[in-house]
Amino acid sequence: MENDADGVMQQTIRVDLVPDFRSARNVEAGCAVVIDVLRATSVMVTACHHGATRIWTCGEVDAARHLAAAAQPTRLLCGERHCRPIEGFTLGNSPSEYGPSVVGGRELVLTTTNGTRAIESVASARRLVVASFLNLSATVQTLIAEPNVHVVCAGTDGEVSYEDVLLAGAITARLRQHRADARIDDSARIAQSAWQAVLDHGVSSAGGLHSTEALAGALQQSLGGRNLIRAGYQQDILRCAQLDAFGQVVERGPDPVGGFVLSADSAR
Amino acid sequence: MENDADGVMQQTIRVDLVPDFRSARNVEAGCAVVIDVLRATSVMVTACHHGATRIWTCGEVDAARHLAAAAQPTRLLCGERHCRPIEGFTLGNSPSEYGPSVVGGRELVLTTTNGTRAIESVASARRLVVASFLNLSATVQTLIAEPNVHVVCAGTDGEVSYEDVLLAGAITARLRQHRADARIDDSARIAQSAWQAVLDHGVSSAGGLHSTEALAGALQQSLGGRNLIRAGYQQDILRCAQLDAFGQVVERGPDPVGGFVLSADSAR
Image 1 (cartoon, rainbow over the protein chains, first blue to last red):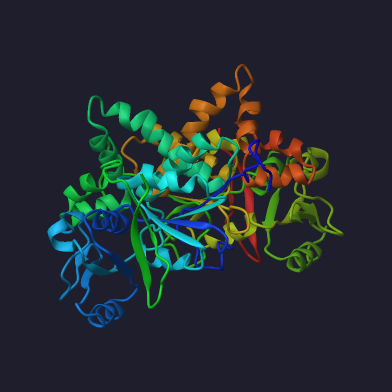
Image 2: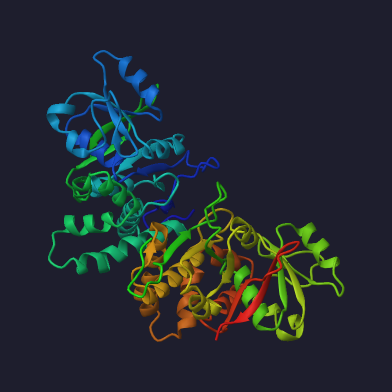
């Protein structure tokens, strides 16, 4: 590792285009950034913005029920399987359900198809952040000082998801604006190219549209986007494409007992 | 599946950014295209251009020795482990070794670290082609009529390799020029973005350089490129970046007994 002119350690940025379950990824000393743009991490960021006090993420539906019932007052049961709400759960996986009157002051238990597994793949990380386009700038701001950034795209059932790779590319591009000498791996370089192509071609071809619509247009082309449209959640793509709508960083809190605990922390 | 105006079946293009060993990939009915730009598939294309009659690819060193010794006259033993020649083998994995006086009229047995595994991951494909930048146009030409194209990037020890993804993106972009309605998966879209970024930024930033140097500049940034430079094979990056130097399609022949048999077939 080299130091830059300020004596600050050179930043390393790695991207997993899908979670890697083969082996421990030497992420212990690093800061993991988990991305599931459509929709798990966008929902988590929305819920924290609207006053949820904690989100416990959970891999299995039964474990989520247990985790919700174990507390008084009970935590809100939230999540989806294959884009659809789960029977008996209070909330599904649409950001539109996570308004302040519903989640304000409440703890949530969330289980989703891909996002939860992605979080578990980097559970050993020193620091764990979840990111979305909704809080891109706040997330980048908190990552600037991290020497080792390890971005994990949740993907869709083990397949690469374009929408997650776009956000990984946006984070990489923004970090490199701050730290031009950052070392990036091949996947980060590829992700940045995908994001640059949206900036170069996607946005300009959208003409005078507001950037939310331009970004939503790119997200609609993705596997996750097409799945959402098929399930009737097209509006959620627009909701998840609102660049920097919120200013919170969402990261794992200091007491991860019995599941992942994430707490909102205003970065600015 | 939809048909286009000519009644031709719509083309589907899928990309594995690294080989997927988890499961059968439903590639039986399709045409698999295996890419290991630095250097296995570039070596195979070079050898076929210079008159090698067959290349048997083989996963293990001992199996390669057996396969070479079993024939009279013996086949040439070729390959590498971690970029380096293998003890007792006639040729390593540098295209510079595969001149006409060495390989003309000969059968080769080749074993490499990543390329062979990638070929094995799609062994069940109806048709199996190996591609390089050296024969990009010939490869694309033969793929135009294929309804299902499944591109597999060999990667490096399970990691995504930028150089392989660039070629996957170039193939995707060229095919979409011929078949604008082609259905592409998210990985193909991402690969095409990476290639487009080289065309937009890499080539222009290289100023007046010939395109071989510009492409080599991009390949040098990759994991595979850095590994080659470290091992003293920087010149091989230039050799593998000679766009369309050769006109042969290299694909598995009709008699794959005891290993993969690839035969050169002039496409133009």
